[in-house]
Image (cartoon, rainbow, N blue to C red):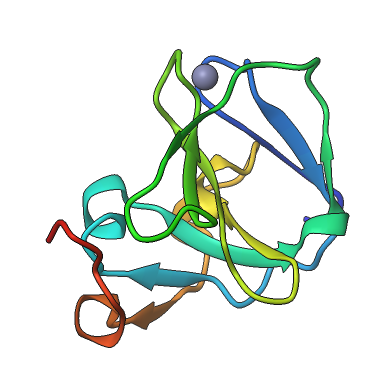
Length: 121
Ligand SMILES: [Zn+2]
């Protein structure tokens, strides 16, 4: 596959298109990623386009107000995280349409020990 990639939540309310190479995927074991299975794909915010019409997106904040775990309020699938430096956002590569996630290469990151966990473990 090649860009653009289309990502969507399960119910389809939220869909985005991304003009970025699919590389640098990271699986993390921090307190939130280990629970949600979020597969990080960091891209520039300017490379993302909203495909669906305006929809409500829920945000879970646990460390700082500028950081968010964004998910669909209907089907609960987390599609994006924000709060990274240099206008980068992290997309959930598991939301890429028409792809077998077992074919994706990902590095592991020890977020459990390598980053501030926020008030909740
Ligand atoms: Zn949804």
